[in-house]
Length: 180
Figure 1: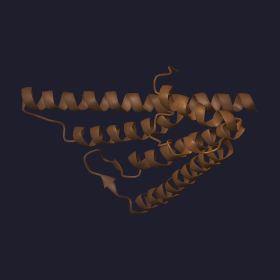
Figure 2 (figure 1 turned 90 degrees about the vertical axis):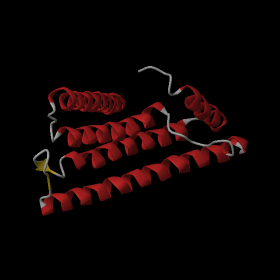
Figure 3 (figure 1 turned 180 degrees about the vertical axis):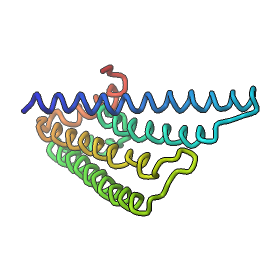
Figure 4 (figure 1 turned 90 degrees about the horizontal axis):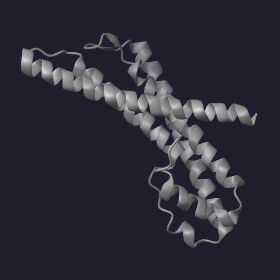
């Protein structure tokens, strides 16, 4: 069972990172190419701006989900660090569980939103695709982020109380520089 979660962990991290990087690079290149076409040939692609926007949106959402894996989201632990170890551990678990509940709430309601978009058959005129297609980013990114938040809650729960705050502080200080 542990190997299943290791594979899932790698797959989700790879998905998040790949989409974030490819989306950012593609959006930047497309916007640049459109500006060059407009400047040098006095013609631009009507769809390029819309597609660039969606590429940046996908990149941002998947990068945010990936941020949970790397521990690079902002958190203020100055008060928690002053608590006794058991209370600090309980507060951190509560924080991660609350984050997971919020992310799942957004994921569920984003699915409702997608269903509404699908029912009303709203189209993106410039791209010629249904509006719900680029909005798929919402449930996918929020579900992967909630998986990461749940993973953090379990990790804190399994860590001895005396080590929890130091582990969280170490992750905050070094999480963004640790390479995959």
